[in-house]
Image 1 (tube, helix red, strand yellow):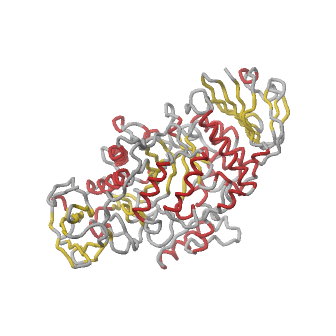
Image 2: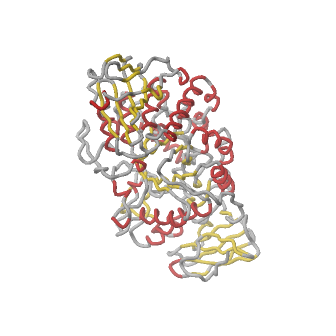
Image 3: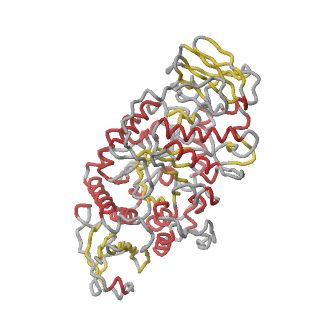
Length: 614
């Protein structure tokens, strides 16, 4: 790879290893002088077109440490740094992406249809908390039925522990997790097992501690918009072309240099852009171009219920493949737990509401009003089933609680099994949160390792936020090491009775999802959902037959089809049970389950999947 140091705007920014040396380029449009600071001294950089500064240094290569001095200030780490071995306040390190010998030449990448996602936080997934430590668990995830792991953000942040949403060096995989080489080993190992890797990326803001971008260019950020977490990124003001390039270069790097298969973009509703073409469309296009011919998936985290995300850019959309559709989680959570605080207040918590959500894809479609008169979103007509990412748990819904409780600790085991079956029966893309498959009991708390001043503010803010629900108990200190350690998965739970039985259920549900001729067809056609008394019914049908999910949320039921007011085609079919969450192997009592015109039997608080052949 060779780049002429006087090449124009398409030459890479950051440090690029050449034959015999390294080319350094940095964007600093407001500076009068930039100096490259190396261990052996300083080199003055030359101004180039568009506010870019450049210098080539011979005789050095990968591993060299460097920084930039801006008009005598600093020195500061490289905004495009590929590695920060000592964290965001330390030196940048030159990385040569060609060193890794990839073994995934035949890997096709990812597509949304058929995908089962598994979200994990690298630092708490294992005791070691590194990229390499994830690798021994990949075989178990493959055997479970997982198609892709979704890594919470890995870009360099300050301190030794963090959720990742305070990242400040967007091009540098965290040195705490093992850095660039270790991430490449993880991705390569995942591909060898048929598992893709989706990366959670944050383009709505950057963390405050270790964020030196404004030292290079004032217009990385803007005060025209505000976010709850920090300065908004400037995608549509002065100098925004280079800021837009900053994030498209970032997604390109992850796809090309790390073979990342997909991106979950955090809080896309807080990515503000009034340009004729939204930055989200540019990001999607850049990711696909960089990954080609491999498939890559783009997933937006948004509460907007807006199908625009899923329309092609040519039709005024953003060209994404899927959105996090939280209405299912919220409706189920309110029904199962009875909690109505905060955003849960928009949900009635009824089986009818859950059924409506399942049929529509999301509940709030611009028409439906919650109990507080709240409405949002638009219709999801024509949106394919794989474009809705459904979950029962994720890092937000667990970790944004005062005490980080998982659903498996908030409701009874039989209810947890039943709702797990409902998630995996549906045609939508399921997302599992690490440990969900064995009903992990460990909390997932909010944790940080900021400097003393910022850390104190975070602790105080967290406790103020939850003072109305803490009930006299002190909210765990995000800054305390114990808060982080308590959040680590306890893998021994997987081998105990409850964990082993729940794991068996998840394996069987995911096997049915892959192999059953009705359930494996991911379509909204033939999908119906309704409630009758304490029972939620969901029907899926195609030419291969029909499948019916019955979730009995009350006492054991023994009735006839007429009493349940089942539709005629359901009453007249010959149903046979495929799976019951009340089976002894899953931790249940083994109660009888039947469905016919004259005899409907459903176990107490259980889900049963019935099959009817054509």
